[in-house]
Amino acid sequence: MGHGCVSGRFFATASLLACALAGCTSTGTHPASERLTVLRHGVEVSSAINVDVAYRLPTSIRAWPFGGISDGRYLAFGIEPPAANGRPADDLKNQPVQQKNVPGRYGIIDETSGELTVRDSLATGANTNYLALVRNSGNTTFLVRVEAIEQAPAACPGIPITCYTWQVTAQQLPDGGAHVIAKGSDPTAATDVPVPVSSGQTVAWLNTSRHGMSEVYAWSPGGTAHPISAPLPTGILSLTAGNVWVGTPYGLHTLTRIPVDGGPTTTVALPPAAAIATVNGELIAYRQDSSGSSRAVCVTTISSPARCHRLMQASEIYALTWLTSTTLLVSSPNGYSVVSIDGSISSTTLNYLTLVHSDGRHVVMLVDAGITQLLAVGHLQ
Image (tube, rainbow, N blue to C red):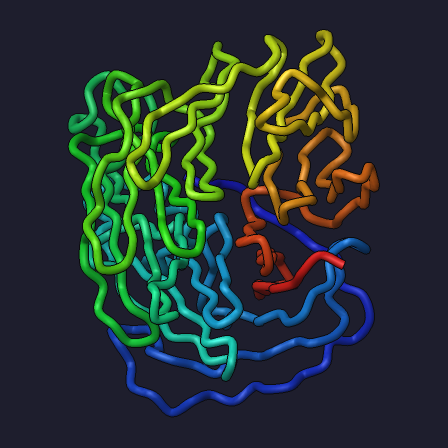
């Protein structure tokens, strides 16, 4: 699951555009809807990213560290469980599972009005860390969420770390009810809880078995979730141009292409030093391990996978993700950098790459602002 904290620096004075509580009904102990403080100026994370709007979350709400996702109309995010008996939510991690069975929650922000609606998860005690947004042919938006429910160690023999059961839900926005579209067959390690990726019309995720192999599942609004691949080694998932890609599983240097429409599965061989490969359109980005203390970010094309166009070099490259079809966010010992395929590099004030998500147009960043959090939505300059 996504873990960690984030801090950010904010420059100039933010303009307060709206800060009024909407008189709505409540669900349980939290408000069903609330008008948020909307900031249009003074939030800066990088010279390469223009922040269009930032939503200041109520002090009673903490977003899960995974952050949020936006399609320009709706912004969705998971909410950490509330404090119990006056203790911070983080303290609950050390309590028995049965004491943590509080309703899971998630938030949906209407970006037209700045209104936040808080909803309960379907499963009691579920985390909503991972989300995706997808639209049908009528341009109606659906929210896809993974609900992960922590299990007692006895339920997960052979898994040395925290384990979870999980289910994938979908709901039509803004007011549709959530329903389950898929469930994991067995409890899984936290690192194997699926993280959905979206092309805008289709959502895909990996269903990992106890034996470390994964099947790629896909879902589109109006259809049913179904496997589109045979079991294959687990890797980094990408969904682009009608294909799902599983990149460079541990110890391997290959990309596996699975067409969403059910065409034949094919593989692309990368150089032996390639790792953490991810695909966007016809471009592949990967880390190249040159020596024990030298790493490079390479970009190449699917048609010429052995050719490396070096964008940057560092002693280590921890992770990378596509922000747009021509721009990457790269994690290195120097922090997080926005790296363009033309070679330009811009530093950021971001601390955790897992808190930044993009559908290729809208970049969402979760940042701390004192005792509150901001969900900032922007675009590349």
